[in-house]
Image (cartoon, one colour):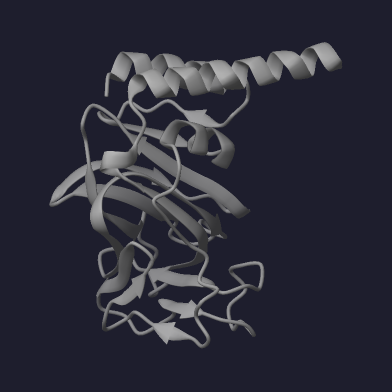
Length: 224
């Protein structure tokens, strides 16, 4: 995928207020708006809202299978890191089933591994920064493609689309900074969606999506 052409689309979407975060990270563009991400990423190859889980299921010591991916804690730690179902114990979500995560700087991380090579991914986070700060990092094998911090909001979207032929094999959630006294970062993650690398639209499709969004915005302005 041509980075320059994708940057043009990103600029158009950002100008329309569609939450595109231009990134200096080679091969990756970040989004904070689900609609803009969906327009750029194309139809989701898989989604996960955890509604199929009938009871809490820990992923601290073994991987838990999700749609199109698995999730598992890496490193030490015996706190949270479970698919949590109502009634919820932790106040890190809107009360529905979700992934309740905990990361600790240098000690505890959480990895989502994709069943197929990934080209785009997004999800919503809850309360990701009150302590050590949580970060989502994208990996192709052992190579880190880029990273972005989560926010402290409730249900804030964060997603990416890979460009230039880049693909991802996994994501890693980790703490940004260390706080003494054993305090890590607890947060919720929900409403996941991903696009397999083979299904991410080509630049021409992305450009058409940008033009369509621009036309919608212009139509709205005329009506107003």
